[in-house]
Length: 156
Image (tube, rainbow, N blue to C red; front, top):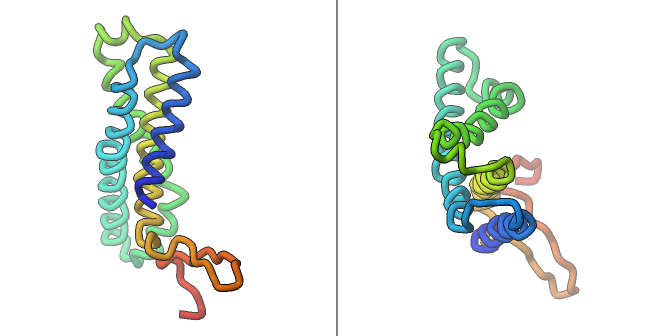
């Protein structure tokens, strides 16, 4: 399941590379590296910042960690995630030599690759525990989608 998620992310970026080939100057290897930076750089940094924020606020305010995480998930976490996705592009744009060579299309392609990598990490974190139960085919031929182990159900 994880391999299919990786393949889907790479395929999406390759499609964008093909469409932008007349106007871009970045190589395919650079875009694939941007996917890795999205997973291992931006994704991990965002996760650590979100972890530090929620733990710090929970301790400072005395609220339960679950309550702080619930509030942060729609108030603070999206801002942290978007800033972490943007940070590698800003670091590259700070290099004068690269900034003179690359055009807008190059930044769009690399931004999409960073976002694809970040989305891949989120999908793997969300559905990684469900890989052994992805689809169950019953004898009647019907397919059943499993409930995530992370979701609380009343039938557990």
